[in-house]
Each structure stands twice: as structure tokens, then as C-alpha cells.
Length: 482
Image 1 (cartoon, rainbow, N blue to C red):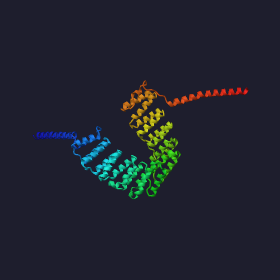
Image 2 (spheres, helix red, strand yellow):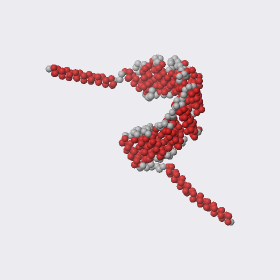
Image 3 (cartoon, rainbow, N blue to C red):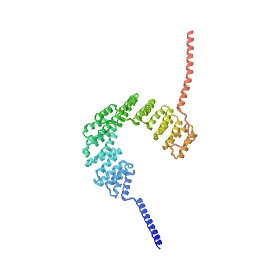
């Protein structure tokens, strides 16, 4: 009897637990299907603001018809949710409507966030309107907002306006401290306005205590953007005399400035002057990295100085600086561009043997160069290496190789690559009509034809010249005998 009662009790308990589980499951499904009121209000507002149908006045009329309760946090959520999808003017109109609707209920942080959004979108008109309103209403602009605004204005070529706001920060209840000074200096130097940035530093020396290294780095970058080696060197000297040793970033910035200047004015000075800078770095116990050498290799490649590129790669290895895949890419690129395909292949093999895995850009660019130089066989070999590395992203390569092969007459290889791409599930941008010889026109390399035609013209002209010379000589003899 006891056993029967126990089994009944257990079965009852199991049924009760199952019922509870079903109840919880239904409740969770109900909660996921039916959104909460706050979420539905947010979606409704975002739908109006993000819509591209109707004008701004119609948007405001639609917003006025809504019966939802508007709060400052809801306004910020709408702007945050719609800032990438909604047109700028509709987003601005929504914020201005919200300000009127809430009757100045928006907080300073809401205003600052809206200004930051429009500054990041480089919307000068919206920034002007909101900054002007913020000033009229006596609101506080925080330092982060000023940093974003200054950067956006300088990017838009309105550095005078950025400096004007900085000089009148007290009217925006924002302090002129080391944060705002650093912000305006960084913004100006990012676009090469180093002299104006130095003027700001000169007038606010008492406010940059503790951030001097950051200020020096910005000024150095600003002069480097102008490729002004003399002023960049002066900043490094001032930095040292002030007791701040330049770091790797400073020297790489100066090295880029020097290389870019020499690239345009003195290509032969690229290697010796750059190596002198690296020697100076080592004297301060700052070892040049692959980034330092890649700056030089990039400029050497742009001037097609092939031998010097190869020497610098060897110098890297001997100095204990391991080349990265960008180093090998820069050397292989200049070798392929100058027609040294065998050496270029060796560089690629060496990189792979070192265990370096390059970015897709490495293969995209080099395969494009090889196809442009009518070396499709080398391009196919390089593509095989890419597939062995399992990088993915093969679609653009197939789109280059298949048309190149078919228009070069190799329809068999083109079809093989097409079938291979289809088998891998790669979406191709080129048409399957390329594989049909009756549709695709085959082009022969124009360089070879031009060379052949020029040779033929030269060979036909030579006999004509010889015949003319013989005729002239005969005429001279007859006239002399008479």
C-alpha cells in the first residue's frame, strides 16, 4: 500500500512540474512576442523619423498627432537608434520638435549628445543651430563635445570657426583647460595647421602642464603633414630640450615626413637620410620596427628603386628587425612592376616560408599587377598560394582571372576556374557568357603587336634608304664624268 501511494505521489509531482514548465514557457513566449510599451513607443518614433516619405513639416504634423508621453531619455534613444538611417534634416527637426514639446525639459547632456551626433556626421548646419541654441539657453558644453566639434569643423575646412569657439569657451560654460587645449591642437594638427596650433600652445602654456608630450607629438604630426622637415626637426629638438625624449611614434612620424619630402625633391637621399634617422633612434635606445622600414620601402617602391628596396629588406633582417608581410608585399610589388617576376616569386615564397599570413590585399594587388603585365601563369600560381592559406574572399580574384583567361583565348582554364568557384559556393560578378568562344572576343597582347609592327616598319624602311643612297651615288658619278 505504501508503495502504491508513493508512486501516485511521484506521478502527481511530475504532472505538476510539467504544468509549471508549460506555464513558464508560455509566459516567456508572450513576453518575447508582445513588446513592452517603452519599446513600442521607441519603434513608433523611429519609424516616423527614419521615413523618407513626406517633408519636414509633414513629419512635425505626424509627431504632433502622437499621444505618447515624451521624455528626455526617449529623445536620446530615438536619436541614437536613427542616427545612421534617418536623414540629417529629419533627425534635426525631431530634436527641435522635442525641445518645444518638452518646454525646455531637455537636459544639458541631451543637447551635448545631439551636437556630438551631428558633428560625427559632419553636418555643419545642424551643429551651428544646436550650438547657437545651447549658448542662448545658457547650457553647458562639456569638453568631449567641444573636442568632437573642433575636429569636425577643422575637417570641413572651418578652422577659424573652431578657433572662434575655443576663444569664447567661457560663453559656453566650458573651461579652457588642458583637455580643451589638447583637443583644439590635435584637431588643427591632424589637418596640417601646425603654425596655428603652435599659436594656441604659445598663449596657453600655463594650461598644458602634464600633457606636454601629447602636445609635442601633435605639433610634430602637423608639420609632417606639410612635409616641412625643418620645422619637424625643430619640434624634436624642443622636445629634447624640455626633457621629453621622443618615442617611436615621434621618430616614425619624422621619418615619414623626411621620406615624403625626399620622394618629391631628392629621391637619391631616401636611403642615406632615413638610415641616419634610424641610427639616431638607436642612440636613444629606440629600435626601428617594421613600420619604420616600411615607410622607407613604400617610398622606394613609388620611385621604382628596385635594388635599394631589396637591400633595405636584407638590412632589416641583419639588424634584427623581422619583416612583416607588408615589407614583403612592398618589395614583391616593385619587383613585379619592374618586370622582375622570378625575383618577385622568390620574395613571396620566402614570406610564406617564414610563416607569415598576409592580408587579402596582398594577393588582390599582386594578382592584379601580374594580370596587367600579361603574366597570368604567375597570377594563377599566386592564387593557388592564397587558396592554400584558407584566407577566403576569393570572389574578386575569380572575377579578374576568368575574364583575363577567356579573353586571352584560354577558355579551358577559364571554365575550370568557373566550375571551381561554383563548387566552393563563391558568388561571381562576371557573366557565364565569357566561357562561350562564340560570344567572347579574344584579344592578343597589344604590346607584342606594336613591337612587331614597328620592327616590320624599320625593316621596310632600310632597303628604301639603301636604294636611295645608291641612286644618289650614281648621279654624282655621272655628273663628275661629264
